[in-house]
Amino acid sequence: MFCNKRALKIIGMAAILAAVFVLMSGTAFAQEEEVSNSVITIQLDTIWLFLGAVLVFWMQAGFAMVESGFSRGKNAANLLMKNLMDFAMAAILFYAIGFGLMYGADRAGLVGTSNFFLADLALDASAGYDWANYLFQLMFAGAAATIVSGAVAERLKFKTYLIYSAVMTALIYPISGHWLWGGGWLAERGFVDFAGSTIVHACGGFAALAAAWVLGPRIGKFNKDGTANAIPGHSLTLAALGVFILWMGWFGFNAGSTLSGMNASLGYIAVTTTTAAAAGAISALLINWVKAGHPSTEMALNGTLAGLVAITAGTANVSMGGSIAIGLVAGAVLVFGLDFVERVLKVDDPVGAVAVHGFNGMWGTIAVGLLAAPAVGEFTGMGPVAGLFYGGGLSQLGVQLFGTVIVSLWAFATMGVLFYAMKVTMGVRVSNKEEIEGLDISEHFTTSYPEFGPTAVGTDALVASGD
Image 1 (cartoon, rainbow, N blue to C red):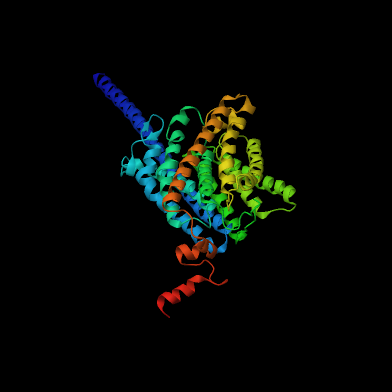
Image 2: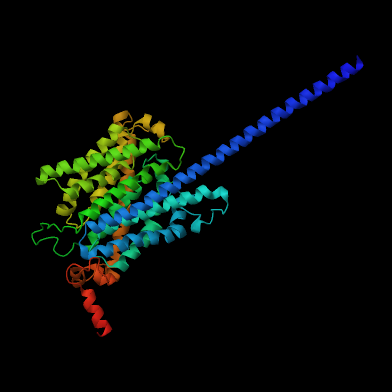
């Protein structure tokens, strides 16, 4: 009997120990599973950011094709060089200065003050996401800078352009970018610009307006009575290819701006991006068709870009109907904006950068204050932002209008000062002879299409060699 009681006690204690072991094992397993899930989530977010960065980088090729295609063949190599060097300058200067100014520790809501030369990024697995995020942000800096190259095409000195590109990527874009995306004063006011209609595109567009204004028009663009002459680009094929590349890259630009591969709204954001682009193409085509009497390929291509620029601010806040409305208005803004720049301002913008990026960047940002749907914002993680048409009153509309005007003025004023200073010191334009020959020859001693027409390169090379 005594032995049986003792055996029962031993069995009971063993059962208790086994239960404790099972419970402890289960807790440890749950903790291990939680850690594993966390690691997987971070890795998926990192992969998504890297993919988004690759898509946005691909947009540099799109810009290069659009800008060279809409320009004359004698300047194609110059446009390609500008797009290449925009990104090369950004890759160094945004790393050294720009990223710190944009995303460093905030000072008075105006500027970042830390992480220059990426000093705060560790070299271990815990910082993998941060490195991918830096790469993604770098691509945006390059995109903001390259918008100007088309507006100043065919007459700007290459060395002058390099100085502009350095200042844009190191200072102008990062400082205004900090006001919103770095947690600055615009963010505190509730300004919404999901992927950069204002922070990237209006900034670049109004910098382009200032540069083209100071630079002056191409030879032969305007007559003595002020009327304008069309100067066709050399390849609609390249321009169309560039637009399709940009449209593809915009999926990374907009959907990538969720900064997380776990965000369930990725597909939705890609769809609103697409519908706005399509609506912009249709709208620009039809409006210009009525005005000019024929369907214009150039206008449809730029209308696509106008829709993409305009939806970028509100892609995560507007309904499907809202995205179509934004695109339809963007087409009108493009058509009449091009007329305004050329006929009223007398500014020569060979590729329409001011209307596409500047005016439509502003329109798309203001549209958030009109069309933001709270249910969409809840779904995408942007919060229940309500535009005027969704019961939000004038508050959000006022913030949107104020923010886009301030950033646009910042870009226009700073770039106007920079280009004017360069004009009176080192000069900004090539000579008339160089402009007529083409910048490919005069600036780079090359030609994009040597099989067609005479070239000064061959003659000069022969003279220099003594043959």
